[in-house]
Image 1 (tube, one colour):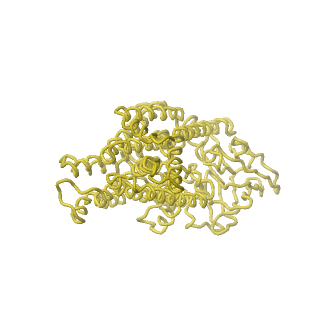
Image 2: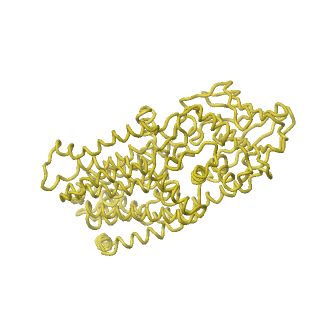
Length: 595
């Protein structure tokens, strides 16, 4: 790179049409997500809205998956595709009335046509990018804010919020928070009186959209405590704490959230600090490094849901240390205005991430925290690329580090965005194919039992697709094992058999412990009724089943039964062995490819 290259880059970033160019480029990147169609939880929400399940939440509370009512959960397990090992006291009730209402409205207007839903998601994301551009323009004027906007807009971590209809709650919450934050900054910096009310109102609307808005309080508090002094107003800790008082409304939010039954319990996937502080602390220690690693170095944190988490934690810690060292090396070239901005943007991002880290782990949790990480990356790239007065190893290392960040977050980011979108489209089509090709057989309504399928896209998500497309095809859907292992099926009687995973117990994967926390072990003799069958735990290892006994109530050859297993890309029928004989069920990767 020639000596004048950073200056030319800054001039390009300061072009008067740069924001418009970023919005157009973002729209082009987001457009292929239209091909995703409906995906995973989308079908559950539509089944809720059409009351296809025995118990469906109301249209304004679609994210009430489990209410924590043991009697209702047992009834749900007995009659639906909820796994048999589900904890009766499981609670996953995410209070998102605005997002629920939006999905209900879209369903009423658009029905089974996915295109308009995706156009709504893309429009929301473009609005969020435009709002982020206004925010960066205010706190980081010039080339740095422009580069931060580009990094934010094209981040591959945002693929799910853009392309997955069920993630519209993230876009709603983040957009309202950013608009409210801008209004608050205008009030504090310019004395714009409407901002005094619009700021808290934006946070309130964001919270109606989803819990992601809780992260907005991190930026709010960080700005009041570490941002620039208010113009023409009192400074000092007392004044700043008083300015942060609106964020105390979060206490009222939590009180209302709990009063209407919101929250999560008895699950390893969703962890909340109020009811399970120790579990939340454990989850934060594991998940924060992974997510920071994705934010700083684009290390795909979603893979940690299928692969051992240790390497992702180590890589995240290394990326954090590297970014800190690079910032220190760049410090002499960072203007005071940018230092002041980063003093609240980066802590705000950290607080936002800490607040939201209890959600189901994945890169989508970075949508709001990236409002702080993107400016940090922009500063490191622009200031790190500058030549120092005394060239040497330190200067070369600084410029190499900045160049690497530029390659990852600017040059490769659009390709990663498109690649992740393509993967989502591919998985969506595969799940539809799984539902279409499942060897269920012709109606009348079948009782379907999935003996072994470790990938949720093969085990649980085909069920709502089958129900939506052919309501008379099945009467019940039961998943017997999602262990990532081969299984042995031994027939013990005309209507009974045992099922045992080979070399590992059940309930070790993220999508298994979603329904039951490891803190609630199963015991030998525990029995569950599902789909007219009796499922009993026969052996355990540390509270995790290693063998279960199943009695279907009718002979395995009954034509109204469909005993299936995931095999070589399809849910295929299991040919029942003779009584006393054992059948080996090999493990095959599912549609996602890692489960």
